[in-house]
Image 1: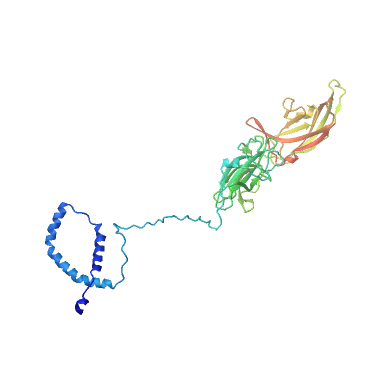
Image 2: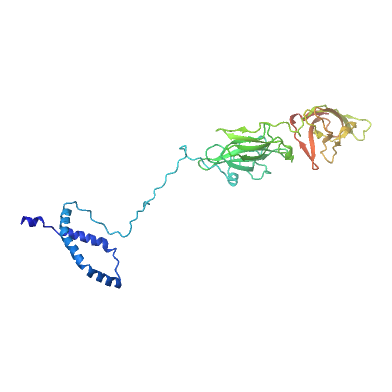
Length: 416
């Protein structure tokens, strides 16, 4: 019966195929309602014959397909049935920590040097040298800044922020002031940054008063990283009107080790208000007694003072002030008639006399012979100073106009 064995087959493979097919579809079948059931019964009666024919074909073809399936590798065991469209979660169960973005140069990012006013006032800083280091309040080590410029201590006037060293982070630039003698003050502009630990550190001095700059009024950044400072040629002194000062904007940049000027004027021209008044000479005073007034017990003498306007601008009111280190003095004689105003004991100390003069023209020189009286009860010898200054009235208030060279505005002389 070789021919019969050739067509024999094992129906277990076919049963497995039908089982898998039913298992995969059973979850997707929705139970019908009563109306659907009656419709289905009528439909099944009409297609019964067709179904029988189809079944016969399956019984003939099935063994052939099963035989072929026995000679193929076994398929993997099917997993659980999946309903609907499977989704894939693109997010891993554990998100990796992103690595810090390196700076374009490959070096760590620069510290943020944008320091607030409060932080700067709370910090202890080291300052560059001031113009006047003799004043006890203009300290430079371990300084804690004030926010009141009237305090006798280095104080903060204003601050701005910008990238002064091209490191990609802002720094802080501050205008500082410090009071010195004679109700005046000195100023400087200083750049501050932070170190890697976040501490406030001094980068460098941008500009200082001195060397032709007597005032710094303001600071600002332009769009290119240049720090601009507004400077003037009249010091912040004695309530001098600010409009008297010539003003310039000068630009400064950091070169890696210090700030240097890169734009703006480098010097001031002659100030139209400035004069160059000079005390050329002052003679020694010899006091002698006058026998005609023994009751008064006075000694009498005179001083000869030569003055000059060496500048190119006429003075307003030139005041010659004589200050004696001892003695009670008075002015006397006709020489004082050259003065438009003379001091009296109610307006000046007893050992000080002054003479206001009409304006001195550029190049003009005058010689004054001024009589002096001294009490015999006072020492008859000592040292005195003749000082010449230019004064101007503004809204009924008198101001001293700065001199272009105040080192030659005075001379000492002896009396006795």
